[in-house]
Image 1 (spheres, rainbow, N blue to C red):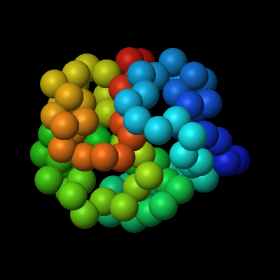
Image 2 (spheres, rainbow, N blue to C red):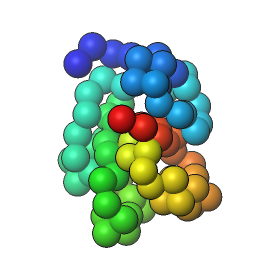
Image 3 (cartoon, rainbow, N blue to C red):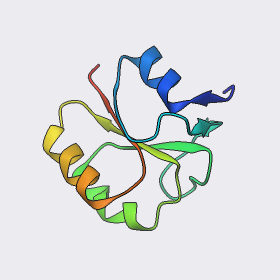
Length: 85
């Protein structure tokens, strides 16, 4: 994956971005392997507990889970995406 800012990625994915759009993403990784410059994903609320240890620069949340997204925004400072596809 080529480097891209979160704002650019959100535009390409037609995603709703909550947070700093200037952060640069280099690749995607699972929550357990993600670090700075990675974007990860939260596909189920059962993995929410792992966000505290996750080092990803951003987290992608499925659009069908708006309440989950709202809770994550309240609990974490890292940018979040809401993808509605």
